[in-house]
Length: 318
Length: 171
Image 1 (tube, rainbow over the protein chains, first blue to last red):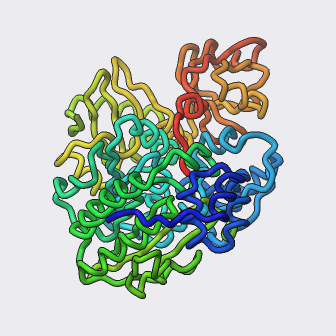
Image 2 (cartoon, helix red, strand yellow):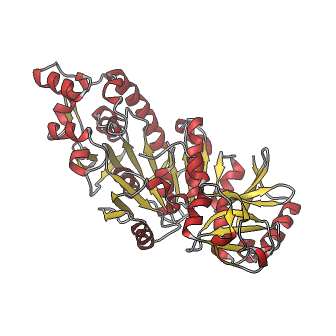
Image 3 (cartoon, chains in turn red, cyan):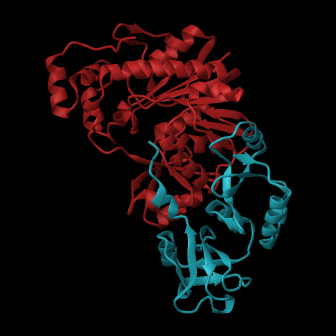
């Protein structure tokens, strides 16, 4: 698969200069991101901050009351477990409540991928690319700390972050493996639900790391797309019949998102389960055409949804 | 490498739990030991235990503490102890809470409440006014002198450690 690129235009050239991007990226954005001018402006502003209450340790009402006492202003969001932090008298990652594991600093879009997964008590579930453990701790919370959650991370340097976060959040139903998720079959388990938040080019977190405006190349998208296809093939092979797979990335690139999900629909007996948040997935990009079900997958844009850039698809494996 | 507790380790832990009135709480819990530079003990679900014994993981369940010459309680262990027992506790002021989380010792004047069951040089749980275990301390005095001027409880471990050690954040 070759990354879709478009010929340079006056518009792409001037937007790339104005906002400091490589032109090929902006040129792609022009072709699929709604209201691209607003989008580019929004990407230069800090991302909103969200916290997710850890109901394994504390109720939402009590957490709110304690943080309001400390001078924080919190607002409800579309997700019951998540607050938007509107005012913070000091860093939200330095309160006693944070250190006690009563909440996790986590983007709303990231939480939506776990809500889409809908993990339940006593299930056997898998988080394939788990560091630093934000979604893992949320899955454990949704499972009420019961059953079995397997978390995998291939990067040894990122293992400490998982250990800290799982301990801080009081998670005790999880086994963490320092292994490449492509080798997950070694555990000889089949799972009710799998979350694959795949390694990606991370275009969606440019607000947090502006270097990504110029540091990525079309070859990076191609490389990630190949890896993501291998990972999702592995994931499909590990889901119990009738189980589900949630695929997510923090990239906007259709080659890392819709194309990967389309591959599953073409190759396996699978269907897309709708997710009630975000914007529709693309059914076409450049000369790429995707299954019409892909509309039911979801895109999250900073200027529309006040989240980081994110993509989520829920796939039922028949 | 995770493994089942030996009979001797189980006895040591049972005695330790009993000292905190937690023998019954831990009676039916799944505990495993991880061998390494030190022996650590963990609590986990049935299913997690089964997989752990089958294929050794990097981490399984919650670390409760370490088994050295004596049992040494960890931060998550302290939380569970504070939630389920009312033994060997001191409650500190909000200001002292912040200082403890920076790794500082506890001054007698900042202790607003305490249980009456500890001697000098004993392990106590340091809690805030909500009863959250924010740290683990060692008493420098026996209970009747614990609120005297100056440092009366040494900070052994505190939850500020999570901030001092944390290197990565979720997006």
